[in-house]
Length: 271
Image (spheres, rainbow, N blue to C red):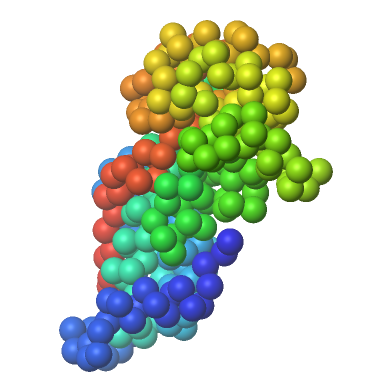
């Protein structure tokens, strides 16, 4: 899901409004996007797309998505008409700072999981900002995480609302009959003992939702070896080690995208 010209146009229109006097500056200038704190870089493709749309040259970036940068390090350089550079800088900074914050938080979570078990994957969720899912999912990947399903087409997930309407086994049977042979079926359960029920009914993946690490471990131990186990539900970076020790294959975290603080970036011109 690369950034499109339509997205960039919408971002710029939101920031510029009906009349931009602020950035009506003559001449030519250079600019640098600089890290004001250390972290993991992401969103450079989106930042470059903003400047490309404005016919500002970006050239080669000194770093790539997923690289760790230090305070004061330059992560993007641009060259072009001053008015265009200034018009694009705030949008570019905002999107790169947000994406880099997601990547940094993801890297922290992955490191915490791998201190316990380096086979455990840390995944994002669909709790993304509307219009920014592609940027945020790529940021999760840049941080070393798994993107999980990118949209509803990626995997069939039986959730609590489905179970409330059709019952656990009934919901699983309903969706197994309708999904493609190439599509996995994941089932969300809210009690450890329901994991085995879901597996017996045909789940490929069992998601233990909003359970304690002790409850998740109990549920994982009841699953056959060919069924993947996932933990989710309000898990923070601080919680990750306890969940990684339960035997799950995946820890999914909505907080990676909806709560990660932006990395502090600054844009400087004429240097």
